[in-house]
Image 1 (cartoon, rainbow, N blue to C red):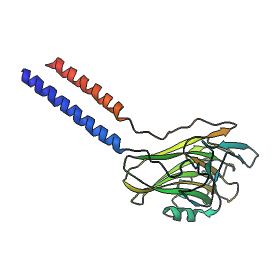
Image 2 (cartoon, rainbow, N blue to C red; image 1 turned 90 degrees about the vertical axis):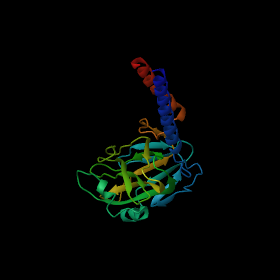
Image 3 (cartoon, rainbow, N blue to C red; image 1 turned 90 degrees about the horizontal axis):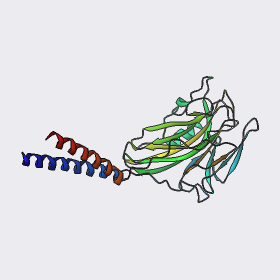
Image 4 (cartoon, helix red, strand yellow; image 1 turned 180 degrees about the vertical axis):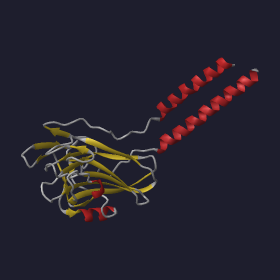
Length: 264
């Protein structure tokens, strides 16, 4: 009986060690992707490709159609700003490798409409399944209902498939900011489902017309805004430290051993 108990304890410990090894291996393989010039502190758009009106800017103000003024500040000195003009939607979709109509499919507007033009910034990167990538963003609507003017975050996978996310709009999907509204700084995060070369893109658009452009700001972390700035949501995930994972496994293992000891 004593040998049976000893063998069971050894087997239990081996299982715990194996599980710990697997978790450490999984944790070690997951990474948060660091984008080239993701904070734009070079004062340029180096490392990024653009379509339409995109530029690096320090803190700046956006005035809407009814003279509402939103002041947006970078996390450091500089951030990227996209104004939804300068390129047809078809040109943006072509640059990103999207099928025609892909973006308009997410232009949920109860008043009807169709995307006309916009601007995009994008970058290619290499990553593994399980890695995460993201950025901070802030959206300002210069326009009003019934226009929608959605903005997007897009991941193009190695196999060419795309994950299209609506960040904000005036009264559609994403954060609906309303007439002359402002999202405040938020964060976009995506966990990769494939291994290989990916592309991350941010796009802002006009709906129904080509006037009163939406503005989208991109930085590596939340900046400031005035007169109001909602707190960031959906933070970019950080892989769980191996030490915490092992602690959890260890406690679970000791609980199992204690229950088995009571049984025998």
